[in-house]
Image 1 (spheres, one colour):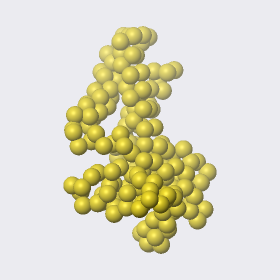
Image 2 (cartoon, one colour):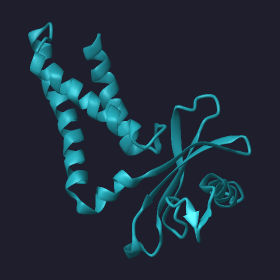
Image 3 (cartoon, helix red, strand yellow):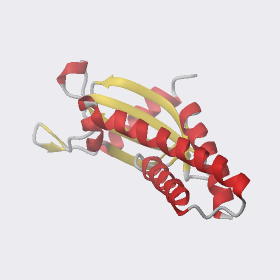
Length: 174
């Protein structure tokens, strides 16, 4: 049963992540889930516990290809020195603005981009908040959502984000 679930869910999940803007809520959720699915697929290949011989070879190849795709993508992202700032992501989860649920993620990019960092905002359905859909992305925002102080004064970044959502997403028609 677990082999059938993995065989159906793993490629479907890979397709949803790569071809749509839909993902699970959280920055690290999809990454950790996809790595665990790839490890599980490799474990099934090594374990070699398929019931029928004609079924064994195609499933081994299929699970190996999906795992190689995941690990190849990860190695490509890890070996790029410009992606090391992905570990500095600042997340704002479940911000309710006008009855809608938003999640925001900010990655500082430094002085080379002309702004403070990348900001993307996702929206979660009200009755199923474990998934999110990306609705806004800006490469070089002019506000640093990572800092909690400005000129020695404490800043409420959540309030600034709520105002940003109201002006950039809700007030702006798509």
